[in-house]
Amino acid sequence: MSMRFTPKARRGLVAVAVVAGLALGTAACGGGGGDDDKKPRSSSSTSRESGSQPSTQEGESEAPIAELKGPSGLLLQITTAVRDDGGFVTVNGSLKNDGGAMATIPSALSGNETEIMNNGRSLGGATLVDSKSKKRYYVLRDTEGRPLTTTGFSTLKAGESIDVFLQFPAPPASSSDVTFSLPLFPSAVIKISG
Image 1 (cartoon, rainbow, N blue to C red):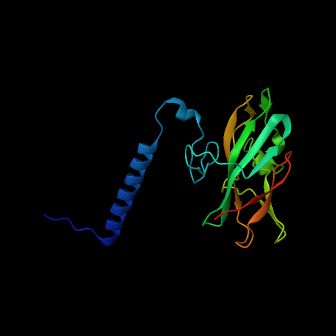
Image 2: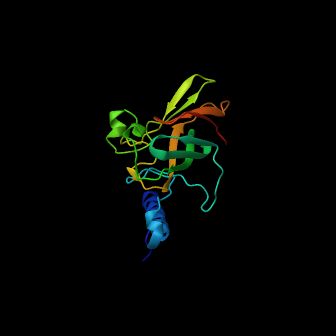
Image 3: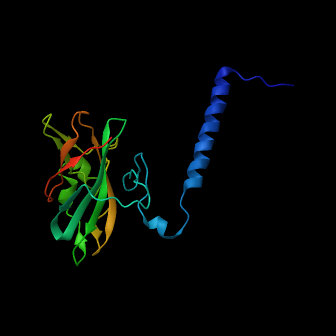
């Protein structure tokens, strides 16, 4: 006896096979043990835990395109600002405690919007200013109001550094130089690539 599947049933089987393949691929990429579990995870989509982290190439040490010195010995080094195909600009870098004592991350870095502040410490107060088109771009948020930036950090030990990212709407393609601003830090002009 042979079984016949309707087109709708075939589509359902294909969908189940695709989902199963994605689940296996995700499980295979999951973490083992060791020090890797202490590092922020990289992803190009929003994470429910500590924000998503678009990755730079692992082990690749990039010279910063901007360095901003903030309060309590905090140093923000911006390594890339890349225009994505989806109409976003992703800014990557690191936040380091360059001082000699534990630094508490100021809540002002999260900005003053209640929805963003309700999601914990972040870099949600950052903006990009395109002086050419006279527009200011704020950190994007997901559908639940969480900022698309590194979140979930409150202190940095002396000498400690964390990788950070921020996503903004992309300015027009004709604008490549924008001013990056973060509360309590000086502003800097950065070049968008891509």
